[in-house]
Image 1 (cartoon, rainbow, N blue to C red):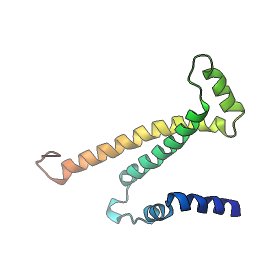
Image 2: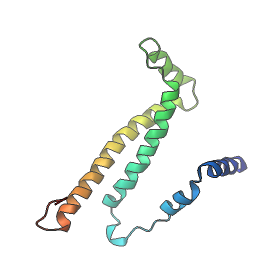
Image 3: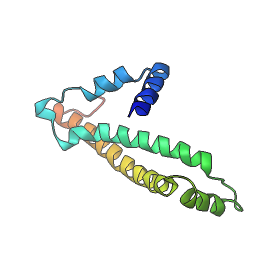
Image 4: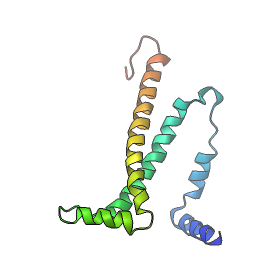
Length: 123
């Protein structure tokens, strides 16, 4: 546990992300908007961050050549710690991000239409 705290402190010293993350986590959700539609934007951001991390990990390990692609996937699946878990995370994050971001887009587009009767968004 002490090692995890030391690593977390080391990252915080260099990146200074603790305060913005804390502010985001403590953000109050208004009662009238506390619905699943309100959550889609933060879900899209969370899944995008997962996709970014797993994409970097895959880019470090995968060899994109016709002769070595299969071997690099076999090494990733069988020899890298949790390598078998990284590929499905990337695939699931890709699908979840497209669904949550399109839901956010639809929600914001249609809420603009219903907020001002008789007008179109951007007019």
